[in-house]
Image (cartoon, rainbow, N blue to C red):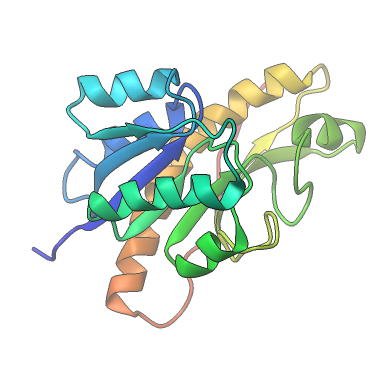
Length: 209
């Protein structure tokens, strides 16, 4: 069996996508393992979940630090854990260009919209206001430009006539938990095998109302 990719997951809160990635890593022949869960918030609930599951954790508050200094602290922990890939899972920090460039092609994020639509914040409210039929989530490579890296995979979620941003967010989160482990697994496999061609870009998740 090929050596597994070693991923470090960065979180800022509850870590539900982190949990999805972690539990998926323990099923079958998943091509990655989680070697670190790190956060900019020492009180992030996801850290406790990771610790219960025996995953090494690291926390360092960003308060009172420059962006570069905080990124350096997080990166040092990632490197000490022997990670070869960084996966952002609700990490609410804009990263410095230098950090992103050093991990080019090895840093992945999930964003709650069907990119390139609705980069940035308030994605569900914007999709509803625009009268879109679907919202969703996109897994993409991280680049210095916000939410602009190559889209690796997407999940589409239908918007109900009576949806609010909160109700829509709940269903998209369920889709994210299915999408993210699969997309990360496919990407690390593709990167290690150098297989020509691109991954399947869309995984449709149908919702009935």
